[in-house]
Amino acid sequence: MTAQDQITTTPAIAIEHLTKRFSENTAVDDVNISVPPGSFLVLVGPSGCGKSTLLRMLAGLEPPSEGQISFGGKIVSSGASGVQTNAAARDAGLVFQSYALWPHKTVEGNIDWPLKVAGWSKQKRAERINEVLKFLGIEALRDRYPAEISGGQQQRVAIARTIGPRPGILLLDEPLSNLDAKLRVDMRSELMRIHRGTNATSVYVTHDQVEAMTMATHVAVLREGRVEQFGPPDELLLKPQTTFVATFLGTPAGNLVPVSRSEDAFVFNGINLAPNAIAPDLDTAQLLYRAQDITVGTREGRPTVKATYAESAPIAGQSMVTCLIGDLRVTAIVDGFFRAEPGTEIDLCFLRDPDAVFDADGRRVTQ
Ligand code: ATP
Image 1 (cartoon, rainbow, N blue to C red):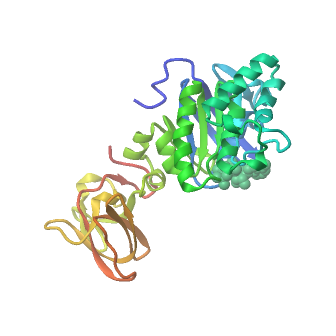
Image 2: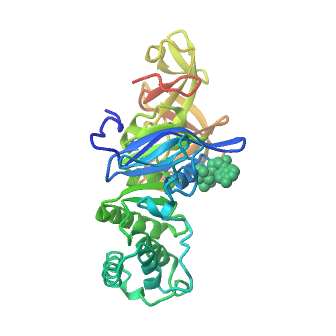
């Protein structure tokens, strides 16, 4: 079942044929994505692939050129009819990468302002401010100004300010990218708690595929404005449909080895890697090997190729070893600590048959 099939209720967010052109440049190109209420949709992809433009259209900051966006079955943006519900009226709260707090207002004042604009009474505002300060653990910062608190605390205030009016949809544009590594990990868990605690449907833009895989119920991998693959994170990791997804997701990402057919085998650098029966229609192919399916050394009966050692990084009691075979970068996993002199020739052994086969255009051909 695909993520799309699982939607039985009205989607919280339905994006249909959404396109955004900036003169000659198509930033978002015929995007179709729907998610049910309570989803955590992550938009991931390399720089310039259109993530922020898509999020800005969801926020109502940018009108689409074509296609439409509906929230809870109601059209909020349409390229054809020109409907463009303004940002404030679409029940969506936006958190940016730069916290953009009002410097002349205290923490309390920052959280209060959107509630005031939305017409909440003084008493309801006071109650809600206490609630969100407590929810985010920042009660002690109530009277401070943004310049008097840390970056991580400013981010919490920015989130508190956004969730104050209880938006049904939370839009987050790389909200953790200005934080240090440790704080990012803490805030990731915190954001998940906030997402669950608010019952909102969230859309989260990131470059960071670890963030994407940790937080998402649904992931859309974008490439040059188009959706390369959309689905639950495990489906994308286990069954990448293109070489782009296979080499973009995963820690480390998958290895792709180009092979050509020679009689009944697929061959790389003169070594038989796999029987050609795994993709009998192809003369050339790209084989996907997970890093854990390649190691340093030799094993009886398994294909081995010569490679040049480049670097190694320790990861949970193992070493992630990067090597070069000509121009091809290959990542292998070795138990324990492994290090060699860069440039040393080593053996790389393929422990298992390939995880998947892709054709020359990068499309998956195996189940
Ligand atoms: P990053 O991860 O670097 O922030 P992104 O995936 O969010 O990138 P966008 O900012 O959405 O990408 O940009 C997508 C494309 O649209 C890029 O080629 C960008 O240069 C272009 N673009 C974005 N905004 C505008 C604009 N206002 N005018 C012209 N081109 C734009």
